Image (cartoon, rainbow, N blue to C red; front, side, top):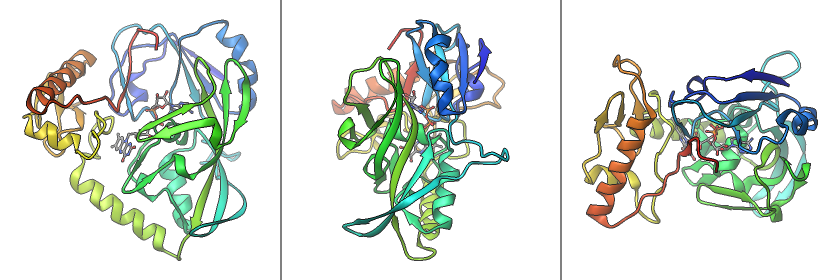
Length: 311
Ligand SMILES: Cc1cc2nc3c(=O)[nH]c(=O)nc-3n(C[C@H](O)[C@H](O)[C@H](O)COP(=O)(O)OP(=O)(O)OC[C@H]3O[C@@H](n4cnc5c(N)ncnc54)[C@H](O)[C@@H]3O)c2cc1C
């Protein structure tokens, strides 16, 4: 466990915005969780940071502590850790392999590990720059895949129960939503068991390549963004609504909606202006108002906003 005082959060997010938290607690081994109650000493506003790729953090002094679960991020030699192969199971679509990976494992690393072993299921997550715990928390997905249906069990830490293991009855998941059934102030995923289909040799790698080509051609994957700002309302593309409401390319300060895909808010780090969360939020509110006025549709945020108000 390592504790960092008053960490700057902007460099820990892909959007590159945000002020300073009270403290950052880096957790590398599940045993670190045993010390958490003492270290947190009653602090109730606790946020869990994965890869920071779905966050809009407010500027200024922020009154919360950030936990950074890095379980399974590094192997014993200091390189990236490998998932553990647990065994096989039969599925309706053929034989499947069960693997366990730490919540701190980077999704791109997990995906290339799976592709090299022809294990299918996660290939829609290509280009998702987060960690596995973040993919679980967001039920991340694309191109017909999402994280929750692949999960067989989840090790979590909660302030009420400590470390424990959940089976699928212990969580609820839907489009970009994941929550525990049990009541808890907050939860932190520690490790996940995933069930992956054994696919034809080379087919997972080919699907990953194809999905990435598709993603690159329609999304600003090389800019500083937090992915899609808004969830797609059922059956409608939020990007299309934003485009038709005139939000494509709209700018305030260093922040603008991408001309490539209007649902991506970009932080222009080269324009010489400081990136400010107020500019991002005012663009977001303007976009919600414009879409509501034109289509009567209320766009819900997909990006998680971390403000000074406890949530
Ligand atoms: C270029 C780009 C492309 C993207 N494409 C997609 C896409 O195709 N599909 C998609 O779904 N998303 C996409 N995203 C959004 C984002 O990458 C995903 O939501 C991702 O799963 C977030 O993971 P993270 O580790 O970065 O989580 P963070 O951004 O760090 O956190 C997101 C939420 O998860 C919680 N969380 C993180 N780790 C844990 C943990 N261990 N335990 C409990 N809670 C936790 C946080 O508290 C927060 O509420 C994209 C983002 C970018 C920048």
